Amino acid sequence: MDNTISEAAWLERTLTTDIPLGGAMDLTVTRLDDEGVELTLPLAPSVNDKGTAFGGALASAMILAGWALPRLLLRRAGMSAELVIGRCETRFLTPVRGDFRALCAWPRASDGRRFIERVEEKGRASLLLEPRILAAEGVAATLVAKYAALRG
Image 1 (cartoon, rainbow, N blue to C red):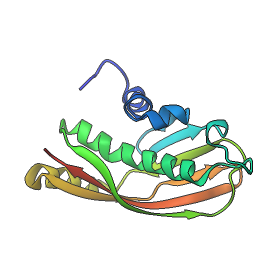
Image 2 (spheres, rainbow, N blue to C red):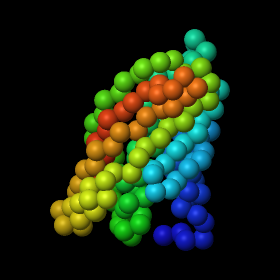
Image 3 (spheres, rainbow, N blue to C red):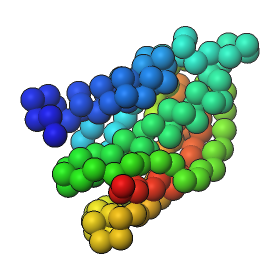
Image 4 (cartoon, helix red, strand yellow):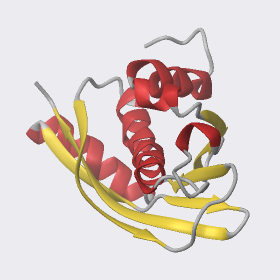
């Protein structure tokens, strides 16, 4: 574990370098605290032919925001595991006409502990999270996603 940089800086590097799509979307980690994570993304790299954010970009931003939290739980526990999205349901509520934010709240503490314990004991665990997109228009999209950790 690299302790020479802040956790937010580590996360941003992970989301933009290890996952090149995050870099192409020009995302930044603008908040990482006890409430959760917030990613900020400019419209330009994600714009569609209508001048609004492409739905796939909104879904990707939410998936990345959600993915960040179990990745951090694993990192904090000093555990190595593959982390994937198992399933998700996306709702697009309103067009996004400008820069936007992808937010995800931490799971309940008991769910986070159970997630880590199951990875340790069974070599696999899942966690349900609900990231969302906030834009000038308000909540523009929501995602209900199940993330799975798998130890090799």
